[in-house]
Amino acid sequence: MQYEIHGTTMQTLDVRLERGEAMYTESGGMAWMSGDIEMKTNTRGGLLAGLGRKLAGESLFMTTYTCRGEQGLITFTPEAPGKILPFTLAAGQSLICQKDAFMCAETSVKLAMHFRKRLGAGLFGGEGFILQKITGPGTVFLEIGGEVRDYTLQPGQVMKVDPGHIALYEPTVQYDVTTVKGVTNILFGGEGLFLATLTGPGRVWLQSLPLSNLAAKLHRYMPAKG
Image 1 (cartoon, one colour):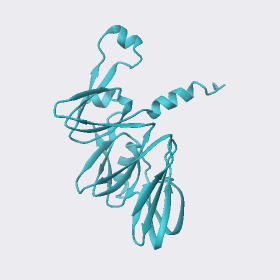
Image 2: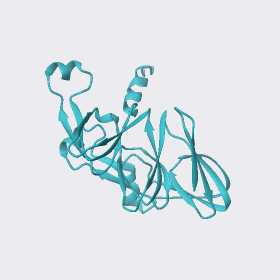
Image 3: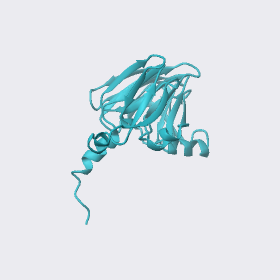
Image 4: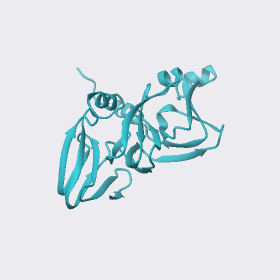
C-alpha cells in the first residue's frame, strides 16, 4: 500500500493498492476510485461491534475495498476542513481519539469504542464517556479539525486544555477534568466551567477547530425556523 495526501485545508487522501491489499472505512467514506476494486459492506465484527462504533461516532456499517486487479486507486476525503494524519502502528500499539476521528485503515487495524474511566472526565470532558480506540498493526488515517499541534509530555508534566481541542493522545497519558477557578473566569472567561488536564508521559495531538465550535458558529447564521 502506498498513499499521498494532497491539499491544505480540505485535504484528500490517495491510497494505491496492489492486488489483494484492502482498506476499510465507514459507510460513505470513499470519494472516488479507479481500477478493479471490490466493495463489501457489513458490520465488521458483528452487530455489537457495529453498535460500539456507532456510539464512538462512526457508522454502524463499514465498507472494505479490496484490489482484485494489478493496481487500484481509492481517494478518501474528510467531512470538514482540517488535516489528515497518517499513523503506522505496531502490533498492540494504540491511540485514543475523539469521536468521529477515524477515516480509513488497513484491515489489520482494529477500531473500537473506548470508555473514559474517570467520572468527571466522562461527564465534562467535551465528548462524553465514549471515545475511539485504534489498535495496530497497520496504517490508519485520522481526520482532525483545523490545524494540528502535537506535544510530547514528560512524566508528570501537565497540560491544561479546553476539552474540545483534544484530538488524540497515547494511552500512557492520563486524562482528567478540573474546574476553572474564579467566579469572573467562569462567567466571563469564555472557556466554560471545566478544563481538561493531560498528564504525561506520552504524546498528545491538539486541534485548532473543534467541530462543535464550527457548528455553533454556523448556527448563528442559520435562519430561524417558523
